[in-house]
View 1 (cartoon, rainbow, N blue to C red):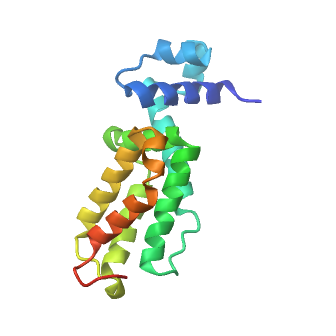
View 2: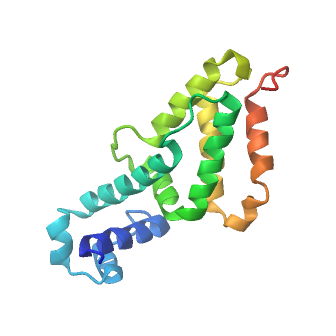
View 3: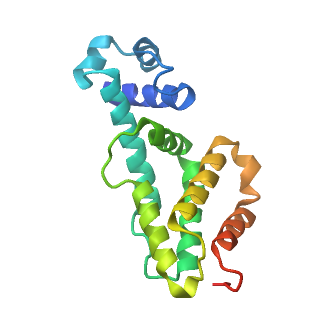
Length: 182
């Protein structure tokens, strides 16, 4: 049985993903959650605290899906493709968490070690691997990956699924030096 707190969190998540935090009122959340103001304020002191909880929950879902037992022992290129396979699977299974995770970049809830930090660290590892022949900077890698991820979660699944392999291959090639084929 779901709790009223879960109902409130899910209603807020749905509304925030469509309208942003500032575009949603507490009464809208309560209506969608079929909850009273008293119920909400018994769990959250403010809309801001509720938003923080929503973003924290979404970021934890994305973090877990992308980084849990990540195979650092395999070759860099295989790690790269593993990350993208996990991302596209997550996009199909939990688009709402992905959407909220991207919105969190603007909301700036401090979540500790986030998937953004993990991505940066992984790009650093890839950049330092001599056999990978990666030419571009870590910042450029992160921006490129985040840009493509941001685009793909914002369009309908059918528009990118048939391009998944081609898209990921293109991103990988953009990282490489002219002579790199790892």
